[in-house]
Length: 235
Image (cartoon, rainbow, N blue to C red; front, top):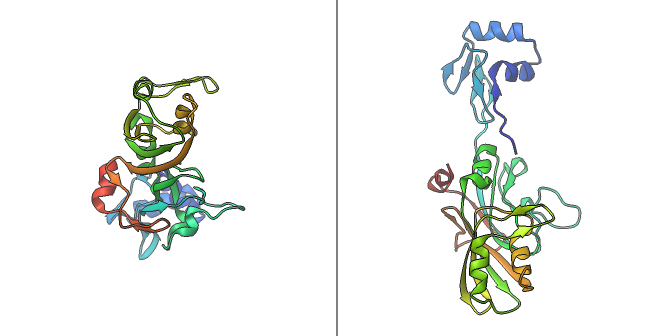
């Protein structure tokens, strides 16, 4: 999702339904404040969280929202769906209809899901170039052997998309349970990587994203706001 960053004069033209000449006069007369500062520059950059005021009228005062959800199995990672309950339906916050999902989990996966209305934050979270660790506990139908570790670390080539996955870390926790750390999130990547060994994934649970760890106090379906430290850890 792209950030809604842009020029102040364009924002005012749209918000006030007026032309640039009128906006220029408003700015030059010192009637517009952005984040508590009088701004006269038409090129001044604002975004969806800039506090913008004309005289005593508040034009915009949005606040960023960051939510952690313990996603249950059987709930779809979408804002709307005609067949299944969505993760948005599980939230109990006023801004829930303004949120988007930062890193989806499929219908039959569970664990940490992050939602926000801050597109720049979610872009930083999910961009492969930032190499944010995503850690999953994976339960397999069959035993896991040591050869899996090297194959995941080397990366795997998927011919359909003509891509090679980035190196991933696999730690064997039990005969058929592993912990997998990824820096990216290709379509059904973990299931497809284990599919190379003809070993079906029967359980997929996300434990953490970066330094944000699923709160043990949250039962499936429950959510809470992120702490300031958790939000800052992604920046």
